[in-house]
Amino acid sequence: MAKRHPIEYELAPRIVSAGLRWLTLTLKNVGSENLIGLDVKLNSVDAYSIHVYGTGEFVQVLKPGQEEVLPFQALVNATSRVYVSLDGWEGAELFHWESPRIQIRVGEDVATLVSLFALTKPYPHLGEQIRVQATLQGATESEDLRLEFWAETPGEEFIELGTVEPKDLAAGEEVRYAVEITPTQEGMYTLYAYLYDGAKRMGHELEQIFVTGIE
Image (cartoon, rainbow, N blue to C red):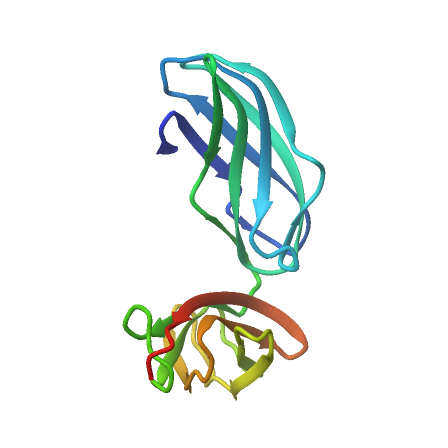
């Protein structure tokens, strides 16, 4: 089980087929205080790929050393990530806890959008060209893939940066593709990558950069 004090946790299964699935969350209190009145949620970072049903689960008390097993139902369309959140009391103190992101892989996905990364220094300046790189990994023999790059500007304009038709990927093969953007506005840019297999969206990642006004 993974651990972030005062909780050990495990989510299973981590590889599923697409459709309506049950995910089982195991929580263990490894701290020294009772955890009381816990509102436990499984949260999706991309509800299109993984939609978690319900409003969460309630745990009245989780004593030191005690485990609790909770079921969550989710509609899984594509590989994505979820995270666990807890709200309640740790002894006499208010308590909030979140897990790192946990990947749920869809077994029949032909490829995965692993990451999106802006290759730039912190706080790039206006007019500086920024390279935006996406990493793909093949799961099975794949073709007919399409990778789209977009950016949301500080002025809330949504602009296309480019579209790539990746080469056929073998299982386990990893490749990187990049586009470039030259910011013309000061403020926060949100960069997006979308991976499609034909008409099916296989993945979605985003990255944020803050552009300063010095050109």
